[in-house]
Image (tube, rainbow, N blue to C red; front, side, top):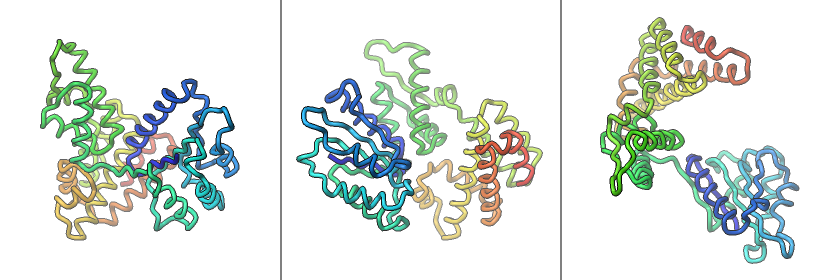
Length: 330
């Protein structure tokens, strides 16, 4: 059996992968000794072929998870693996092969990668997990809340999704915090359904970072470096990690650039919301901000931000100092 999980939404991919692993351990291999995970980006073809070979007689089947195979830069590995998988007869080979990868752009991949991708994509258990749009994200959140035995008011859910966007990693984390917050405040009585309201979002969800980033980009757009520096210090002192803050600033300016380009192409705010899969609240805020920038300025700012990110992650610069210098340069 070959299973292919790929796409932009890595949260749902990891959730599905965890479900498959747990089922394999529960039903087939309680010890987990026959569950093998390979780093496809670094693995050699010989290593993969050995792992996916049929189990010997009297031995339990294996589950082999191969992650990020399309990131592997070894010459001919994709063609070699495709040729090997073509020979697999699902009826005679007992191993479960799971390929987990990011979104794959067939038009921008080599012919050997494209061949392997097409082979995996046509498998019976192949699924592409695309990023959810706003409506889908709202439904996903409602389902998770219902599974926890709770409900949420419409305005509270709208506010929550406006903070997290379609980032399911963060949305899931914030929901878990809300569940704990509601239960710790007062344990549910028999038959009682806890209802999450707008006041709970304000108490348990930290939207201050996002609000502060809107204010920070406003200050930068107005060329008010003094205010921008003060807002940066405020964010850092309020508990935002340096790396997370920089990531959010980069994300914000990338959104502004995307919206600027979309406007130049004549898109309406409603079409931009659907095209970029953003919450309407975020789009409306950005539409006001983007008037303060031209496209070349936004591209220049993003270039400086990415350069600063590289320096910080490679240890070439101290994070807080680099952020302060960045504010002074923008």
